[in-house]
Image (cartoon, rainbow, N blue to C red; front, side, top):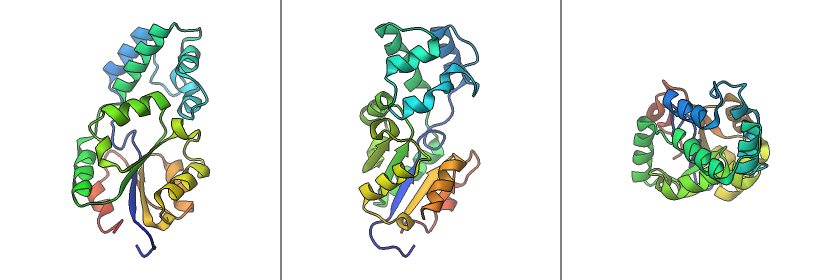
Length: 203
């Protein structure tokens, strides 16, 4: 890279640092809600997830939309616990990359579509948050990827030019928007050799 200013690695969380929820996770959530096939993309779990990720719904409103009724506070708390647990499974290969980059003194930031409550939980309780000097979460920002405005805010927050940022994400739409803005990008898949993809970048 030849851009001026600091260089950053900007990581997504879900399906990059974390892995997909396990079948057992979905089963526990289905038991708690009395619903079936919540993992399916057309299920009530996903129907208003973007609004939840964007901070437009409270936990009670979101889980009410999933359940189809008003939940009591204890239900909301239990469902929030299950939801946080199912997205907390970590990808050891990505963690190795983070450990290496952190040890080299690289600038690491995170940008994730994530509800506010989950993001605050992970920020304080997770084993990975300490790798990052900047954490950006959609639920706290009121915007979700791939909205260009969320990338603009991150660029401003990092004090870097877009071409000084390597963005790693599993969603092609997010990657496309970032690339249009000038970011260097890595589309993360299950077989991605992340060390090879990042070799020579971000310096």
